[in-house]
Length: 375
Image 1 (cartoon, rainbow, N blue to C red):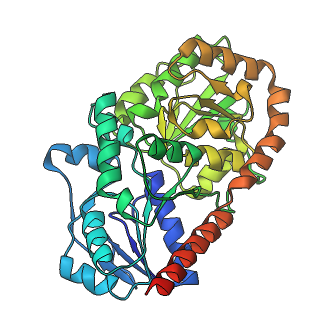
Image 2: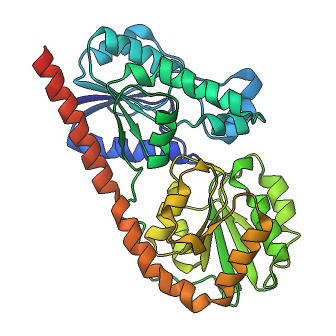
């Protein structure tokens, strides 16, 4: 197939959505004739457009590791004209122009659902249900309903689209667990040997609720034993480091390589995911893929609770007391916690990256075949 993959940003490392996009692109480069339309570094079979930020939100966009592409209609049309199928990843300016051109040329269009309105609004300091609802309806009416198919990364994502009256088919395609995220013999950091290590992974942003976890650690009866390790970059880095320094064992902050991250997944005692906004929760999936038990928020606007083994591994979103209770239970029952590792590993295997990309490719092929029959 000749696939044109349209995404504003494919080179970033902070955002799970961008990392997932890159993984899918790298796979389809090896299976099909793929052309990428994006910003960033020049590569073979990549059409590069200029990048820009909204002036009033430049800082927030940089901290989220996201930017917009400024599309050139003539260049877009020349690429899309040769395509069997167009996959658009983000509902912004580039995606809008690509969608218009693809529809005009009667090309099959797949849209990825990777932009959660709540996430956008939280990061610019706006948290209103009516505004989130408006954005869902806007994205659905302007973008998703004009595609042939929408791919959502979770059942939660599909439910949100259904809630706001999506009118085209929605298929659930997980971001997937790459094979490198698996159990591995690793040595725990010497300075953490006698500690109960809690790991948090992700952007240092408000919705991730690092602050809640640190409050819970302070209230834990095991606070002197707990070592919090936080990986990631983001707007709240300085603020969170200051907060982490108030813990009995100051929190350890580091932006790590994938190799180091896998080592941390294999040596930590518990993964905590307190995020209140997630369309899937790639970090949780990668953690349990390495056999690291995860304690997860049951947030209303998050899909991550799907990864919890049972209710004992869920805590009430935003509730410090409930988190302390669950945390202390698992530290007191460390042997039981370690036993849960195998069950988590088994759960993770239902989300393999290989299965996700093969399902996506099968759906692409169906759309291309249907398109050829119609013409």
